[in-house]
Amino acid sequence: MAKTQFAVEMGMGTDLRGADYTKAARRAVHDALHRNYLTVADAFGFPKSEMIVDIRIGIGKPEAVDLEEVKREAPYGHISAEAVKGGADLEMNGNIVIVANAIVSVSFDVQADGAEGAP
Image (cartoon, rainbow, N blue to C red; front, top):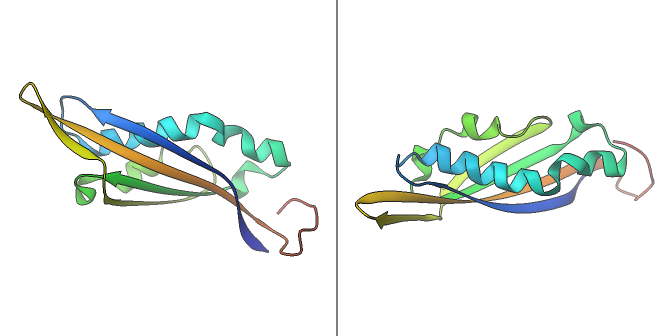
C-alpha cells in the first residue's frame, strides 16, 4: 500500500476581534474542508474511516494554535495537523485581525501497482 493524495484544498479563516489564533485556524480548515473533502471517499469507493487528512495552517503565531481543536474540524479519518509561520496579523480600527490560511490534503493508502480496489 502507498499513501496516494486524492484532493488538496485551501481555505482562509479570520478572527476579527478576539485575536484568537485557534479560532482563525479552525475557520480556515472549515473553509477548506467544505469544498470537496466530504465527497472524495464516496467518489472513489473508499471507507471514510481510512481517509488520511493532513492539515497545515499558516498563521502569525503558530505556537498559539491549539492543534487538537483544529483537528476536530475534520469529522473522520486519520488526522494530523501542524501550524507554521504565515497568514497575517493586521491592525484595523484598534483591533488585531488574525488571518489564517489552511492547506488540507486528503489521501488514502492504495495499492502501489495501480490495481483497483479499496484500501
